[in-house]
Amino acid sequence: MLMRTEAPVAKLRSERARVVLRATGVALALVALLTAALGAASRFVDVETVTITYLIAVLVGAIRGGVIPAVVAAIASIAAAAFFFYPPIYDLRVYNPVHLVDLVLFIFVAVVTGRLATTVHEAKMRVEADTLRDALIGSVSHELHTPLASILGSASELAQSREIAQDPRLAGLVRVMREEGERLNTDIQNLLDATRISHEGIRPQEEWVDPGDVVNAAVERKKTCLPAAR
Image (cartoon, rainbow, N blue to C red; front, side):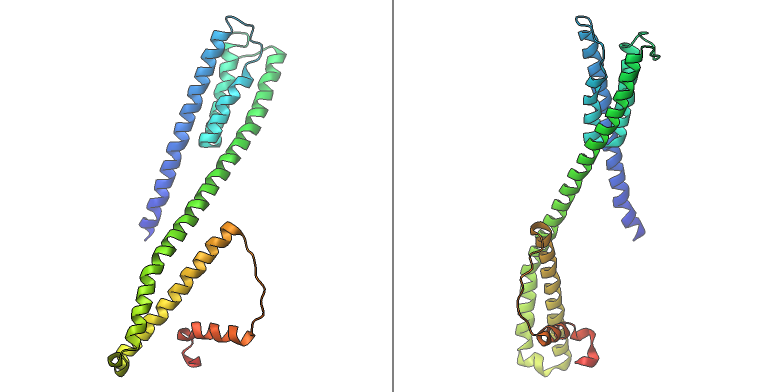
């Protein structure tokens, strides 16, 4: 049982790692592409600050893979800006105070932007997971209703048979089958109601009821668990 439980978890972790790696690769490719584009543009115009452009790579990495690709893209962007565009060229050291402030501001904006994009990505994944779960529950529940109705109908017919009624052992088996079928039908209906509540919200409808009816219905439903009360 433990191995069966761990296998899906390991599969999910492996899939998540692949998603992060792909997102990191895409973000780094964007950093390289943006660096090449900015390098070509710098031949024709004076490029003072370039870090704001690299936010594209940070956003893409965060949306596609979360925090890790965004952080990797931000580090690569800072290194590319310092190495290729800020004097001294082809050196990671930056001496111009304006460029230093630009890099510091980029780090701050990249962290905030990456975090916001990651939050949006995680919220979207949660919504998709909840929608898929509710659809699966609803589909399975509806599919169970048809065979269960046939089982309950057959159990009712068997209970009315004279041959079954004359055999205490068979009559007891048919009664248990019908009671368990009714209990399962109630559980499925409760599951469907819970699914509808999650989609539509709770909308209570007030009406007068006799407390005795509620108690009797509950006892009748659970009488198999209370043999002394039968």
